[in-house]
Image (cartoon, rainbow, N blue to C red; front, top):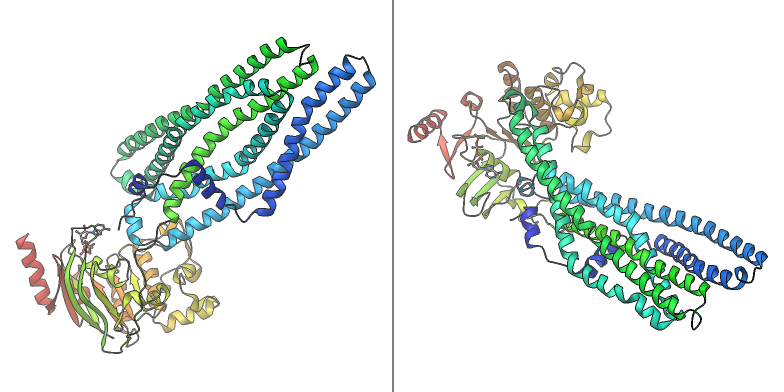
Length: 585
Ligand SMILES: Nc1ncnc2c1ncn2[C@@H]1O[C@H](COP(=O)(O)OP(=O)(O)OP(=O)(O)O)[C@@H](O)[C@H]1O
């Protein structure tokens, strides 16, 4: 299945601005109360702004020209009170909508993160972690900016513009029409350039994702980079990504600022028209006070429009960000659940039935593989590098599903188990286990609630009962030993020991060890061998190993190569097969 987000975006459906705005507003649909309060504050603010010019015009015509200074003082007082109320409503708008933006950001980040947790390994194979981080952090913040700042101004600007338009038309229809004519030019211009602005912003967000992918890759591999002195190589790669980001950011800046000059030109044309026609009309339809008030309404009509220019650019960025976010939210895991109640208790714990699998279409790694693994036995998977051992184990742990055929666990299709049930039954120790920053205790109990409330003493006892005491003793501070930097503070062998304790303590029916002892000294390896031999009688073990001495005690050996999994017979037969394979290649 295609999970590559950058490829998906090329095929994404194109939404109209209105449909996109509706989708964006759904994100804050549960904020009714706050939105109503904020809208009331915005409307009061706009109404106060609109009343100002009328009061000024009236004061000039009635009191200034009539030299009645008491009246002038009174109306100045009224204006001052209006400004103060305006101050309070402005503060309220910002506070309320700021809260809406932050809550939306919180919910959205949770939703994306939860979705990321549900997506299959395929998704992570096809996308770079840095790009995903950028979507969770940067793109969601663009939406936050839109909701917390732009949306208030958006509504305020529309309210003020509408009010100013009503006043312009109510005072003088012809002059009002002339004043609003440049608006048509602005609308056409906006409609024509908006798709380009959105595209340019989308490119810019993509390049931010690309840059953070570069940073993430070089930080993750810093040891190799330093050891191989590849700093220059990564510096150059980062430089290229940074250059691309710089260019796309400049283009986005240019695109986002393209509205402002055109809107300003429209406003100036309208002012000029009203001034010329208004002066011509003074004495007939217009007084000086009314003309001043009229010009203020033209300003009140076009000023919000200029703000809308900036907001429109923010809206286009928010839409581009939302496209990138909704691509993740719209994905579903291809590891679907099915119903299968045919649980049997035959000797076979696990069965591969005519399984085919490939990571990419048209390139099969396993062809028509069938085998059975019985309860309580030890199986070894051997074969040349790249032969398909880890792939077979990954299918058992259901990191992927077969493209054809089926895998049965307890006679039941593995797809019919819930993720929890499956994780309980199948334990997996990876070649390079990942540990979390915390303590050895936290890492051992990861995903295991059974011992959650145990004290350290009780847990140590449980560990000793599972024959794991000798492994824990290797850590100087026992369960409280610190693990930092995602496990990089301890050796790979120690990581494998913690992963071993983590998997065994869960008491799985099937335990897969993928090169799990590759980094462990021979004495500790013997210790692990003893622990494996003393696992509960029902536990089936699957051991993947290159060092054949580690599989001496296996009940059955499978040779995995060129898409096939075949019984190798004895250890000697497996060695012969490996040698033969080497000679052939
Ligand atoms: N995530 C992946 N995406 C695409 N191809 C993959 C992926 N993982 C493995 N492969 C390919 O599948 C084939 C089998 O790989 P696999 O890791 O199963 O081999 P292996 O026998 O475990 O090798 P090794 O002994 O080196 O661990 C290889 O050709 C490998 O390149």
